[in-house]
Image (cartoon, rainbow, N blue to C red; front, side, top):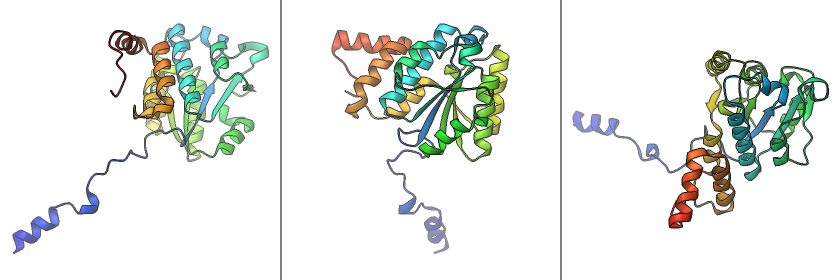
Length: 231
């Protein structure tokens, strides 16, 4: 009898059985805001942790993914008229009707207009990418986390003045609780199921345009075999 009781106690209850549902830790189109910070020429000129062509490709893919899923997106620049120049044109083209919030503060989170916009959207998760990682990403990431936000940092759509500066900033943010992700990871996390037909074509088109070898593989499979993801 004691053996039977011990076995019953160790066996998982019916309520504890796994369910086919996503983790709340995953990003979804309606649970976060995207904040793109200081993707401008003057900031890019000094970026050394990532090739600038790759950076421009990645942040454009990130922006297109957010636009596809209608994610609330905030564009912000620093000293655009007097020093840093306009936001990357390919990034602005994804959001042609949105004027970036231009700041004087290095820490985006110290500009009340930006924080007001974040509050307006009302999402407790924030995805951020910035130039430079060690300044314009680190400072708002730490500030937002201290105010209770769940922060995700897009490491390959951000860059630092050296690889060490980028890496140490990422490490510091992760130690504080930030979640590091990449732009392709972001897009596929939002899609998550290839049966979601409404976003299938724009997602695969973005992958073809910006997804390197994966995108080329999609083009090849489609042209040669009429293959599609999930089929």
